[in-house]
Amino acid sequence: MNHEIDDVDYVLHSSMSYEMYQRLMRIRNHDLHKFIAWVTDLCKPSSVFISTGSPEDLEYIRRRAIETGEEIPLKTPGHTVHFDSPFDQARAREDTAILLPGSQRLPFIRTKDRDEGLREMFSLLSGVMKGKEMLVGFYSLGPKGSPFSILAVQVTDSYYVMHSENILYRPAYDEFVRQGERVRFLRFIHSQGELNEMGQSRNIKQRRIYIDLPGETVYSVNTQYGGNSIGLKKLALRLTIKRAMEEGWLSEHMFIIGVEGPGGRATYFTGAFPSMSGKTSTAMLGRLIGDDLAFLRNINGEVRAVNPEAGVFGIIEGINLIDDPLIYEVLTKPGEVIFSNVLITEDGDVYWNGKGEPVPERGINYTGKWWKGKTDDKGNPIPPSHPNARFTVSLKAFRNLDPRYDDPNGVVVGGLIFGGRDPDTWVPVFESFNWDHGVVTIAASIESERTAAVIGKTGEREFNPMANLDFLSVDLGIYITNYLKFGENLKNPPRIFGVNYFLRDEQGRFLNSKEDKRVWLQWMERRIHNEVGAVKTPIGYVPRYEDLRRLFHNVLGRDYGLEDYNRQFAIRVGRLLNKIERVWKIYSEVSTTPRKLFEVLEEQRQRLIEAGRLYGDPIPPLKFEY
Image (cartoon, rainbow, N blue to C red; front, side, top):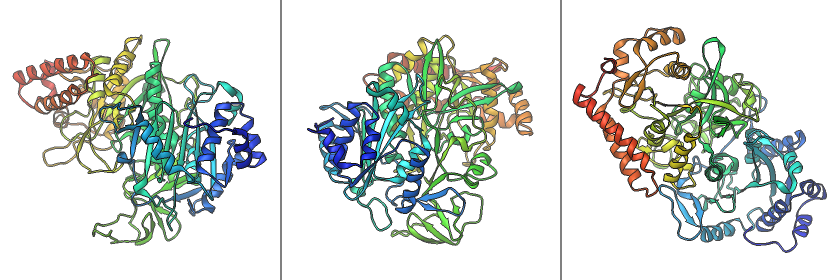
């Protein structure tokens, strides 16, 4: 740790009950004992609760979340609502930093001198839990007893945070006991800080989220929003990405699903999309293993993946019975669900934007009492629920859960899908020529319009390689190099696909319906098994019209016109060349970018220039069939 405790046993004995002390001592790991003693000495809680993950302990956390007002029970059994501060509703990029020794810097990533950052954090955490109970939870990222598994400890003074983690992650106190001194664990320390009259973090200007890579520790203070406070979520991703880089695997911001093909076979895909780009809705179209994160390893020459999580922390805006029946069912039936930053209606139910029901006249939301027409101090309308309102629920609540969701050996990955909110450049679905081509021109070249999940101006197009830029803790060029190397030792590399659900015409109208993604998934599934052909274009393989016409009929029961095909799958040469120019410029400023990236981009540029010379711009896909 960063400073030693002279008498670990004395600190532990004096800060917790005998029962809690005994629970901790059952884990024979001196490093863990030192860590808990150090945090206790720093934060000065009035008591400490060591959770074993037992049904009784889980129930205690649920009950205390309600008793303290961190969660409000609803009329549907098991449903509760949590409210964050109006100023604490999304990942706070400006308050988040990677701590690195000395003057080290990482491109596109906010970094801070480690010593300076730790001093600031220790000052903010000093005595922060006075009068509060400190909660300690033990979890496994990935199935327990798996070669993928990474163990972690969460310390927090928020019952809502620990309740969320108890839903989202596999309890692993027993694994800590079993492994004893062999345990290497990630560490997460969180405090809500001082609370206002609504029970929300008061000192948002002192909100800090610091990721200490050398110590494999994340510190988070003066915040409640799940993306800033739930340690094992995206905060852990920064730590696992670094570990993956060191050990030669991939820790990714990806869903994992099994897509059912002909004869009921399941082909497994991972998919990376920036927030609010269709990631969760795509994940719900298959057999669900995970909606957000994935660990990928090369096992005997094939890529296998597990979901480090056991639950979903999903965006709720726009979820309705017609478009999202599986999620809607989970959110409206009895069972353990935490809603955050939605509207509580007068009859004790919840309403969120886009629910598909009439907007209530009044209720309670994160701003307090709410009514139709309510505005903020600048005169802007306040919607019933926040655009980044969330739900937290166990994977076991979904009836499309894949039976192998907890398989310690993972599932074999047949395809990787990358997508973003792109109004005018990418076609709706296409396949790369090979691993390197897919990594460079699809995965490493994602651009996406900014959404409400990140604080900042919406609508701007952002560069977001692998949909992972916000969470990188390593140099981008080295990250890309690791991706390319990962593919070198695979006997049968997964196919890499690009998708774009947000293509628009000149009038700004979407060229595809929400349902069309079902067809794209079926086309990709058949491509992996070499059951459909493709049209070879400068950017990769696109579907043939006849295959799509048949799939639209079989999957959606509707016709698919040739005019739609030509508009959607036209190769927009000028826009694609502009994209290469933007991506090239970005990577040319990263000194560690592998030469291979520029070589692959240049090959694509030349193909596009030649195609434009021959066929003009845009180019209907049928031109490439002859």
